[in-house]
Length: 253
Ligand SMILES: NC(=O)c1ccc[n+]([C@@H]2O[C@H](COP(=O)([O-])OP(=O)(O)OC[C@H]3O[C@@H](n4cnc5c(N)ncnc54)[C@H](OP(=O)(O)O)[C@@H]3O)[C@@H](O)[C@H]2O)c1
Image (cartoon, rainbow, N blue to C red; front, side, top):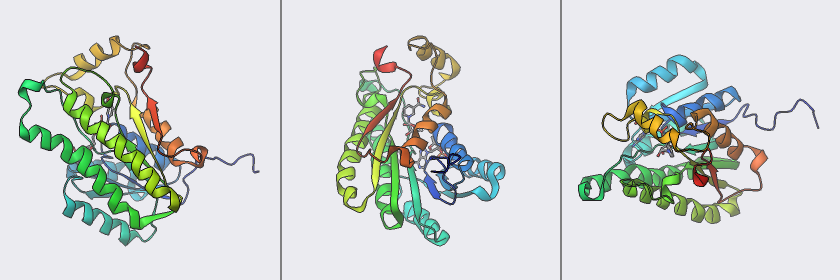
């Protein structure tokens, strides 16, 4: 074996990252590009997509697409088809949540949480199927909230529990094709998404969460991206249907 070989290298590979303009997804986009991949990335806000394109240039293709909208997901995969390279790695990451006590949950809140996190994840994995190259790998972003008891986080946690269940069943369906799919389960990670969980929460919320964690800090998005890279690489060739916690020890706190 070539001793200089990098088993994580994505040179010449094509990846898709949904929700790739911010936080965890943006860190994954940067890591995949650093490893040599061309990355197709999505988000709903054009300005954020343009900012990533300006920074990373030819290494990325940006597609404005709401993961919960079937027509926009179809257009995303039209763009993937137009590249003509298929997909070697997919990170299904677009997601959102907010703190909402049970008494305040509206029907619209229920639909919003499940539209992006469950319908969006399902439509994205389904849409990717015709484009997955031999040995392609998929990573879905779950959350420690799926198995937690955080007050006011039940709706979000339930949607992420659904995502983890779906991923396990898809692993069984896709195994005959040699396609692997695993769930990465981040704990609290310093992102705009975490800071926006409650109106006006911001840095104060991050500090409050960090104080309750074993290392006294929340995760950096790059620490989650490193595990996503592992899960799309051949280093994890023995894994499918797994749930990998990257939680800074939050489950032992
Ligand atoms: N941060 C944490 O502590 C944490 C912990 C566990 C799990 N997670 C999960 O990790 C993922 C990323 O979260 P983050 O904290 O990095 O959040 P973030 O900073 O808010 O980034 C979310 C990304 O997803 C995009 N997005 C949201 N809804 C979308 C939709 N319907 N269609 C397409 N793109 C959409 C956003 O762009 P637009 O707004 O422009 O669409 C953005 O690019 C989510 O699935 C989240 O549930 C986060």
